[in-house]
Amino acid sequence: MRFSALAAVGCLLLTPNPLARAADADLQPLQGKWIVESFDYNGNPVDVMKGAVREFKEEKYTLAPKVGDAINGIVKLDSTKNPKEIDLEINGRTLKGIYALDGDSLRMSYTLNGDERPAELVSKPDSGVVLVVHKRAK
Image 1 (cartoon, rainbow, N blue to C red):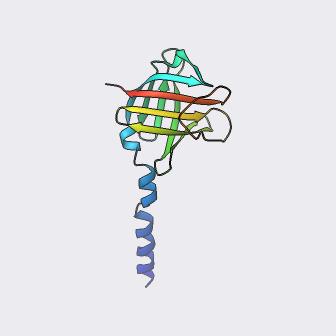
Image 2 (tube, one colour):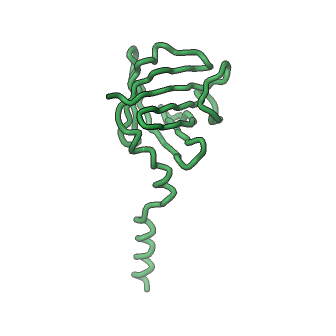
Image 3 (spheres, rainbow, N blue to C red):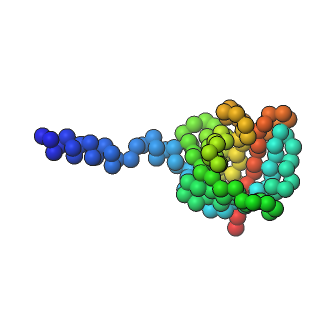
């Protein structure tokens, strides 16, 4: 009886959580290099970020602008939400955002400061929101 209880607990621990699998459904299609086509903050273009390369490897990512230092972080997705949610962890802080992944196009919007997650993929004046549009690198 003791063995069967331990076996049951072991099975529960080894069986993947179906919700966790659903939350990571977009992680695999996200893998690889993406080129930043546009980067807006507070509704204004940030031209220095145009052409930057964002690369996803597993749950890690790097954003390398053409000028300056690369930014490294961890990405967490929840593709079960509407809109889909993305969290970018950088240097101990989390940028909360949303995203849309459509083939070779990736759009993400996130708040630079604060805990509010944007509700739409836009960057309006004085919103503190970033909108980044990427195309998959060929």
